[in-house]
Amino acid sequence: MFDPAVVLEFWDESHPRWEELKALSKFLGDSPYVFVDDDPLDFYAAVALSPTNEIVGYHVFLIQPIGPEIGITEIKDRDGNSLQEAKIRGLHVLKAWRNRGIGTRLQKLTLEKAAELGVFQVRSRSEMSKVENYSIKLKLGFACQPDLRTFRDGSTAEGVYWVKRV
Image (tube, rainbow, N blue to C red):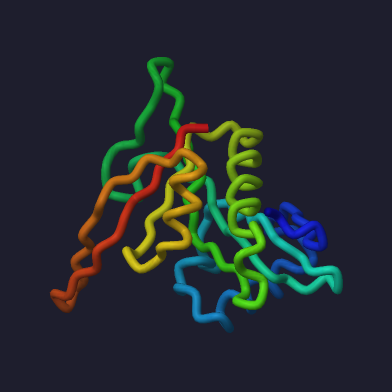
C-alpha cells in the first residue's frame, strides 16, 4: 500500500531542485549514467517527497528514438515517424522509505507521463540482483528479456531488459 504521507511530483530539467536530485543520485552511488551532463536528450524524473519535502525516491528516464542507442537504424512506423521510448536510467528509494509502495507508484507515474509524452514504449535494464525491481516490473505488466553484458575487461553481468508498450 502506498504511504499517503509521501507526495509524488513529476520533474524535468527545468525544476529548481533538479541539481539537488542529481547530487543525491551521485551521493547514493547510482551509476554515472543515470544523469549525463552533456547528453542532448531530455531527462525527466518521477520524484517522491517526504512530509518535510525531502527527496526519498526517484525514477529517472530520458526520451530517445528506438534503435540508435544500440547502433542500429531508428525504428519507424509505416508513415516514416521515428518511434520514441522512455529509457529508464535510475530508480532509487531510500532504505528507510522502502516497502511502502513508493517504487511502484514512481514507476506508475513514469508510465503515465510516458503515455502523455506520446512515446511508444518504456524500457529499462536491471542487474539480476535487483529482485525488488523485478517484482514491481512483473506486477506492472512489463515483458522481460534476459541479457548477458560483456565488459571491456572480459567480465560479464547477467541482467534483464524490461519493456512495456504504453
